[in-house]
Length: 243
Ligand code: URA
Image (tube, rainbow, N blue to C red; front, top):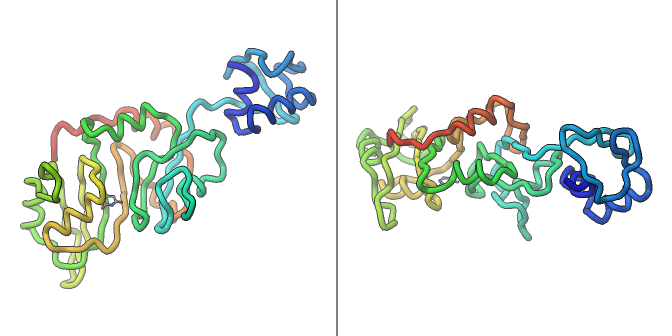
C-alpha cells in the first residue's frame, strides 16, 4: 500500500495534505524519512509515525451506537444530525450505518466500513433476525402473537415472514412487547402493529443477528465492538428456522 493512502485512510488528512506532511518531514517509516508519498508500506509490519506518534493501520472499524431519537441513519444529511456525526472518535472516513432505523427509533445500530459484513446482515435472502422492544398503544393480545407468527398483510405483495411477538406487560392502555423479525421492510414494525389496529409509541432495536445492544450505552453513546462481538457477527447465520 502507498504511504499516502495508509495515512489518509487513518484520518491523518486528505491525500494532498498527507503528501505535504510527508514532504515537510513529519512522517517516518521504520525510523527513517520516507522516500516520498508513493513509498510502499506494509500495514502491520512497518512502523509508521506521524509527528512522533505511531499510526497503526485498521482496515475495518466497527462501532455499536445506541442511536438516539432525532438523528437520521445516514452518512450525511443537509438538515438533520446523522448517526455518523455522533461517532467523533473514528479513523476511517468510509464508515456507514448498517441499515436504517427511523428517525424516532432508538437502539442498536452497527457502524462500519466492512461492506461484506453489511451485505451478509442486510441482504433480503439472509433473513437475519432483528429484535425490537416496543411500547404499543392498545392491548396486544395472544391473537396478535398468532397472526404475527403466521404472517400478515402490511400492504406489500407478500405477507410478512413469520415473526415472534412476546408480550411483556400491559396495563390496559399500553403494552410492552419484543418482536423479532427477519426482514427489513420500510417501517416494518410500525406497519405490522398498524395492520392489527395498534400504534407503536416507542421503538428500540435491541439485537441484530448475534449482536446485542450494550445496555450500558445511553442513547447517543457508542463504543467499538470487542473482538468477540466482531467474531460472533461474522458467524451470524441465516435464520433458516423461521421463528
Ligand atoms: N421498524 C420500524 O417501523 N421502524 C424502524 O426504525 C425499524 C423497524
